[in-house]
Image 1 (cartoon, rainbow over the protein chains, first blue to last red):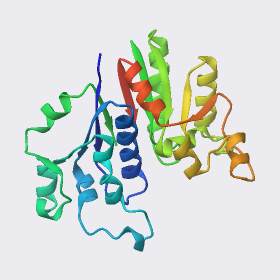
Image 2 (cartoon, rainbow over the protein chains, first blue to last red; image 1 turned 45 degrees about the horizontal axis):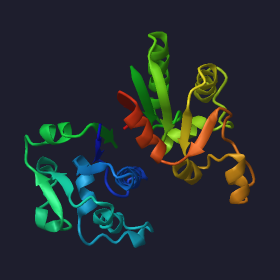
Image 3 (cartoon, helix red, strand yellow; image 1 turned 30 degrees about the vertical axis):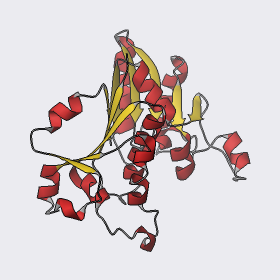
Length: 119
Length: 130
């Protein structure tokens, strides 16, 4: 049986290591040739904001790491529209190559995957 | 049924390892199989041998180790997450010339692939501390 993995990431990019370690899980999954989706919800949507300057804190830019996802076969990052609305974020403020999921699309999207990792 | 358990919280700042231990005991009691135990994120602290909570409190790390050894579980600690948080075995301590090592016996440091592998092997992946 062929599997597909959904990694759900719901923390802000520099809140500890959670977002980084969620991304690592998606990268490892994709590098095993498993069909993999990354879904950002809640404060996780902040990970996609353009113009991050993580060097000031100093950390490595999570956005730069998200940008390598296509090299691993993850062509698009899925983002929850409601989470963006709740935070007053316009999708133009986000990195390109993002697919926004409208309210009500989330359950079906998650259900398409055989394994779900929640971070 | 086959279960894989993932623990993301540390004993000192999360209920996750305690809840996971209760759940794991219940699984074994009901005849289920635990195909993998994976400690990730702050959960790696569960595997340290040198945490010493006050004597009138439960020593969760010790209880987890006893459970792992009693049931001969495949208990994996994410190596990258563990190195970042100061949980290392003798091999890693020597590799990075660290002054000590503290991984409890019965656990293995390995890569994140073991979490994926466990999730794919199991009928259910249950996460604690997300």
